Length: 241
Image 1 (cartoon, rainbow, N blue to C red):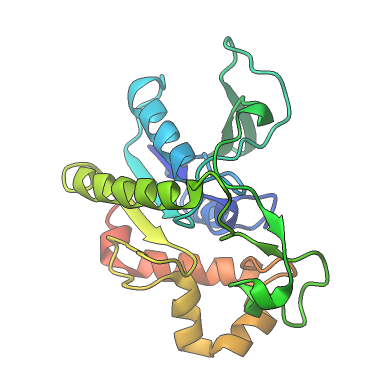
Image 2 (image 1 turned 30 degrees about the horizontal axis):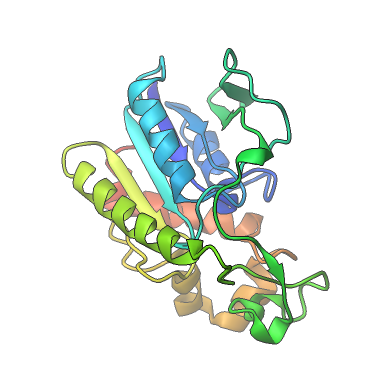
């Protein structure tokens, strides 16, 4: 068995899609023992913390680290409104013999980063994903608040990407970008984001109507196509055996 750690956001989390690409990868490859640290809404400060934890604190040695980069303006949004327990830092939910979701036992009180502000669809940079799909409140995830944390988060994200690119030169790390953000990077030969990859194949309207769910995330079919593409790339496939 090869121990694998995944760092990602909602595009890799089972609460958004039960057949998310990383779970489908685990289903296809029984030799991979995957711990998914992906969390909805979390940012690169969280990624950095998880990366340091699996390198210096985890009692498990990971043979491969996969990083699905998220938006450059995201910092850290703890998900579970529970009290911190120093004796139980990690929470584990086992979904199959070789796939486990792992989350830090954290409190919402330590939220770091910009706030989410309701806004009109016309002011939302991602308003195109809502057309005919989503009737709920619109949120502009790029609103700058008085703290200036937007710019700080972008600088942090840029530095983290450079750090991981440097680490990947000597460590088994694969990284890619799922959604269109400034500074999208990968080291697996994709050379684009998965959103733009799908648009190049099917067009934007086809993507919206057939490959996204009502929240604007990739649906089960899109996640299946993501796995198909990943395993076709030699720079990713080399880690599967």
